[in-house]
Amino acid sequence: MKNRRKARELTLQILYQMDIREVPAEEILRVVLSRYRFRPEVEEFSCKLIRGTCCFLRWLDDIIKSYAKNWTLDRMAIIDRNILRFSIYELLFLEKIPPAVTINEAVEIAKRYGTLDSGKFVNGILDKIRKERGSDSTLKWSYLSQKLRNPILASFIKLKKTRKAWLVGGFIRNSLLGKKSRDIDIILDDSGFELVERFAREYGKSPICLDNELRRVVLSGGYQLDFTLKKSSTLESDLKRRDFTIDALALSLDSNSLSNPHLCLIDTKNGLEDLLNGKIALVTDEALDEDPLRLLKAFRLKSQLGFEIEDNLLNMIVEKHQSIDEVAKERIREEICLILSSSRSGDHLTHPAAKKLLERILGTPIYPENLRYLEKILTFETELFSSLKSKLIEHLRRKVGGEARLEVIKIISLTSPFSPSKRIVEKVTKALKLGRKETKLIQKVTNLLPLLKESIGKPLNSPEVSVFLSKGKEETVETCLAAIASKPGDTGYLHLCAKIIATFFKRQALILHPPKLVSGDELIKLLGIQPGPKISTILEKIHQAQIAGKIQQRQEAIKLAYQIVNNKE
Image (cartoon, rainbow, N blue to C red; front, side):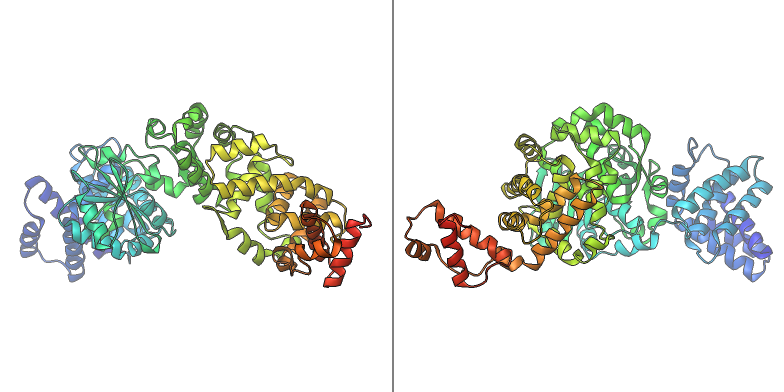
């Protein structure tokens, strides 16, 4: 420990002289080592600190500036500045040294050679850096480093050559949280998108023009790259125009930055601190005015990350909720469906600010408590649904139109009481600009709910249940789930719907593709009746009897048809 202390003090001496004399540290080091003799351990460790610090001096100074709030490097005491320089290098690069040792040593040296406040000043900055960027940080720096070795990024860097570009936003955020991300946002310091066009051609693609300042390239494997042009004279000014602090992190797309993200990451608005604290906060109060969709995005991030929205932002969402009217319905639908893709979306929509915003969007009251109950059922923790888990998951993952069935049933649960009116359905489908297939599903579930009511208290082979299953077909599942969600805590209703869903999966082939026991033409000949709606009614009743298990043979179907015609059924 004494050797290491001596080495750090020697490092401070060399860096101090470099600073005040403006002479290269290597030259000063050579002179000092020629005049004085040090133990090999002292010389070796000091040389490592000095050369490492000088190699990354620009980035180390950038880190100091970002963490020393209200201090410029010039105003900072020379002793403090240089202790911070080599201590940050040690903290971020010499992982075998415990962070606590690095900080304690720096503080003791600051107390000895600095001012009365130097120890406290150095400790505060180093401890914050340790928590956010150090080897014992809860942020996943090694995972980010792994993800930055992405061949797509490598090919772009090779193509751009010396032109400046920065990786920003969700890719960095998610990687630091250990989450996969295929959405890559890049800021270009360029006058146009010629580079983006060349990059897209490398993959046999063409950029999608989303607006004058945004191009998107979609690649195989689900990767989506959004390129924007730098709008301001400095990157920092551009980052201040972003939405949330956790999305205002940036990394220069050059080999040094990508190799050392913990050192080179640009964080001008406490994004790393908010990542650590699980907080969603605005970069500036004007961020919501620039794009009102951010009102909704705050809840999407909450649902995806499990973070808390800061009180100031919640208050602003309430205050500015009407401005969501300015946003295209397609963009709103995309955000809402992303929220609903979370397994606990109901929990994230219970806050009054979320309710106020969603009710403004949809034009109708919402029921997050119903959605929460549905999602609790879909955790499959109850014995009733645990046996249905695999089949329900498979069913709800299937797409209807552009959305998964799960998101559609969640929309129904969120917006509909037990007997939603056609007016509510029309409002919701128009507000979200849902496609024809999604709208048709919601309308069908709404129409089926009264039939399900008639099944309450009836046995599973009753005509009422058979009618519901024959008319419900695949939407039997969605209707039952919507009904369960509308009656939280009603165990009798829960048992009935669970049994009906189980019956649907058990008899699915019979319900969706029943064997044809008798045709309509045959019935016309056998019964001597004219073609018309009555034939369809008879065939439907035969199908319902098949579902109930009452008939299986052709003769049984014909007998039932005679009974129906003679009003004996």
